[in-house]
Image 1 (cartoon, rainbow, N blue to C red):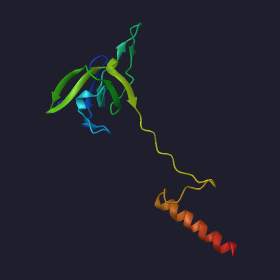
Image 2 (cartoon, one colour):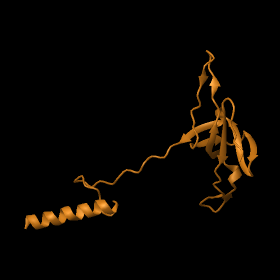
Image 3 (cartoon, rainbow, N blue to C red):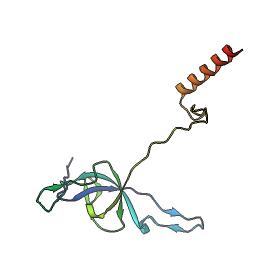
Image 4 (cartoon, one colour):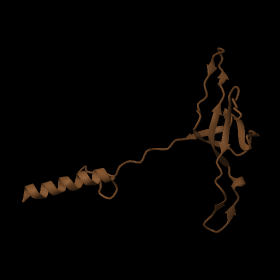
Length: 135
């Protein structure tokens, strides 16, 4: 297995294949016509030298999902896998996944049917106890 360590402000990424897009009208847009490309960051260089000579670290890290400009970068093959080596300037954004919020009913309890099994069991036991004590 070969290890690749980008130099300077370069970033090694693996493109994420999204496939062709089919519009509502039925027109098929091939994947290579996209204006942006998605990729997963594999390795990151040390960064760029700042005005005072100190290194400015990269804004991306290994494992990040990023959006790249449509064209640019250098293709390379390592262990029969295709990668793209790009300057950090070609990375437009980092895609961050937001955790899903739990659904809450007006009384402040998690909504039944959208909760895990343990929460459902606790809700059921609490409701049963309330019915027994209330009657």
